[in-house]
Every structure is written in structure tokens, then in C-alpha cells.
Length: 470
Image: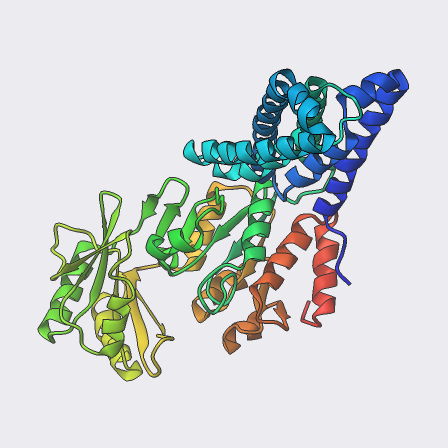
């Protein structure tokens, strides 16, 4: 059975308060309350404006207020004009039925004008609310109330309703937050679906947690080209550890903040090595905050696919050729059969084992092909995390991984959690293996730990629940 959500409770509270305002006004003056305030319209406005977060609530409140003012004033002017210059003669000539028919016809005609004006001035989102208020003013029963106080009743009630909602939505209900904990997560097989996207639940909940002070970062082999698309709209404040720890990246300002290049002798040797065997290698470099990738002719279908999947990305420049020594290489990528990339790695390490790090893992899009990634010595996700922790004060680290290159960072965290879709060797060292492949489950656990009053007790419960080692 689904739980009653906080938005549900806040909506009910907002509606309750709008009704209590009517009660207070009625106690002070029944006539004033009935003339100038409508709990019905105030409650509708409050419920309509209540959204999951403050920015969306403000947007809906703006729509409701502006639409009500526009429609209410437009309807009021129409009725004033009709009653002052037309109504008397119509009633004398055609009676009450004729009066109703003529008023309804005029209301429909001026509705066309109202909608046209809203669309003409690009206020499309206000149309529905403006029409609703316009009709309530022009054709609702007024119980002998003059049109001016009647229209102002609708407008003021709406404004009060949205103000009540904004007030409630901006109240920070007392909730414990473990802002001292650092949550570090990978992306693939962690936060992303098989389609390489965030679910709507993950996106919304992570955004809400970050606004509440969640201390969170991402450790990934990806570059900003894919990250900016995947994480669009997520307010990540911490630097991200990208390219397997070779680079730190400020996604809010789209800026590389720390880059660890391969030294020049090693770079020269790697260039010469692959050139001597006429072998393509993807060489990544960062020039003036722009990521560029050098390559030559592709050696197999996997390399060609790798290129085609990335060639149109806004954040990457592809250059055909070999990187020169005036430019600094961040890392190299070769894609080939396992025995081939292992041979390349052995040859390179035999000459520069103290200067470079080689990582080999499967290229998941085509069977039997593997990545060889070559970085500066000491580059790893663990090293990047250690440097992050040296610059920040966190009492504990909780890591989420899925791939073999996540193992070091998981081993050096206080708690490691993976989904059932993680690689087997990763699941073997994880503290908790969630029996699900859904990314939403990880976000639910992050939320549970972040808001826990006693997070250590919560961690123990999670371990016991999933029957993992302690």
C-alpha cells in the first residue's frame, strides 16, 4: 500500500488554512467574509499551486495569480459595461430569457478576445486559469452582490490561496539531515537505466535531496559530453570525479578544475609505439577548457562505433591525426580483442611502469572487445576520492558502484552498496547487494540514510535486511 506523501499532507494543510481564514473573517464580520472572501476559490488555488518543490510551486502560483487577475478584471469590465449600457434595454425588450441569452452570447464572444490576447502576448500557460476566473465572474450566480466586489472576491481569494501554499512549501519541517556523510556513486548500472537515463523518480528525489543539503558526488569514467546531457537540471554542487579520476569537473560552471596529464616522455613513447604499428588510438586532451579527441583510421568495428556514438556531442571536438607534444594527453583509449589490448599494456608498462596506469575492461556494446585505457601513474577512482576527502571534512563515505574499476573506491568506503546488476566481482566485495536492478532502489536507500536520526543504526538495519556481511 503506497504511503501518504508529504505533498499530499501539505496540500491538505494549505486547504485547511484557507478555510480557517474564512472562519476567522466570519467571526470578525459575517458580511465582510461573504463579500470579500471565498474559501472555495482560495482552496482551489492552494491545491492547484502545491507542487513537489518551491520553484514549481512558485511557477504554479504565478500562473494562478496572473491568470486570475487577468480573467477577473476582464470579466468585471465586461459585466460593468453590459449592466451600464445594455442590460436595461435588453430586459425591457426581450425579458429575462433574452437577457440571459444576450449575456451568454457576449461572454462567449469576449472569451475569444481574451484567449486571443493571452496567446498574442505569449501568455499561453495563463489561458486556462484566466478563462476559469473570467467565466466565474461573468456567469456565476452573484446573489445580488455587485460585480466589483464579486470579481475582487475571486481575485483576492485566489491570491490568498497561493500565498498560503507558498508559505507552507517554504516551511522547512523539522527533519534530521546527515550532511556530514559523503555519498559517492557511479552512473552505469547504478543511477542510470539500461537506456542511460535517470528515471523521473531518481531525478526528482536526487534534486530534492541536494536542495536539502545532501553531500553527494559522482565517480565515473565518463566525460562531460555525456554527463551534461544525463545530469541536466540536477543541482550538483560538489566537483565530480570523472575520466576514472584523472579529472575533477565542476558541472555547474562547466569547468575542469584539476587535470592530471601523462608526462611528456611517456606521452612521446605511447605516440611512437602506436604509430610504429600503424594502430589507431583515441587520445584525449583538454585545451582551454575544451575536450578534444585525436584519432586516425579505425582498426575495427568497435572503434568505429565508439566514434560514431560520440562524434556529434557538443562538448567534444574530434580531430583526425596524432596529438603533438605541445599538447598534453590526459588519457588514451584503444579498443580491441582481450589478448591484443593485454599485449599493448604489457609493452607500454615494460618501459614506463612508473609513469602510466593501464586499465582493461569489457567494451559492453560489442562482444569480445575490450577497452585499454592509459592514464598517468596513480590515476584511479580511489586516488581521486582521497584527494576529495583531503579538501573536505566528511565523517563517513558511502559508495555505490557496479564495475571492476569501482572496487578500490568501494573497499575504501565505510559502506558499499550495489544493485544486483553489478559485475560479479563487485558484488563479491560489496557490503550490501540490493536484490533489484532498478536505480530507484539506490536513491531510496540514499534518502533513508540521509534523513536517519541515527544513521549508524539505519546502516545496521540495512545490512541485516539484505543479509550481508557486517
